[in-house]
Amino acid sequence: MMEQRSSKALLAFIIPFLLSFSSAQAEVARDPGPRPTAANDQPQPLDGLTSSQTALFNAGLAKFQEREAVKDGLGPTMNLDSCGGCHSQPTAGGTSPAKNPQFIFFNDNLKKTNRLPPFITENGPVREVRFKRNPDGTAGWRRP
Image (cartoon, rainbow, N blue to C red):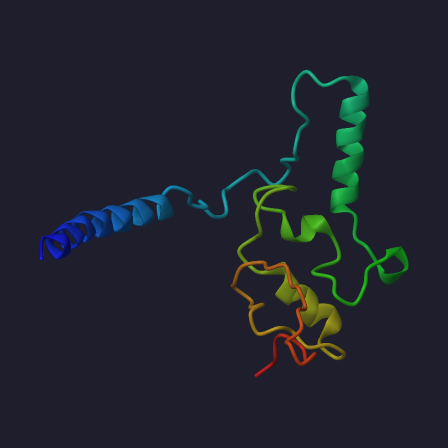
């Protein structure tokens, strides 16, 4: 009987503690969403870089914003035609814009030949699509 009371007392202490801990942790990180910026803002290299490091930054930025084509290696399971297409708000390297560029790209280029996963929506978040297979080998998602 004494053992049951001790267990109940311990649970009465631990459960609220764990619940408060998990809800506090869930509120720590929060994406502030799209941020306003001037139309001509471009990412800048960090201060103090060498000329070689600055050149590398600029080459990487150009590649990040470059649009790819099939001849460049754009394959059948691509997410968009450039890294900067999804990561453009408030400027290159940021988060996705308010209108999902994957949805726009699909409607402009792929609607006649491909299917869009149901979790890619016009006003929804940009998502990296990974085509996983079910245990029986069928596609991991279906269009409704």
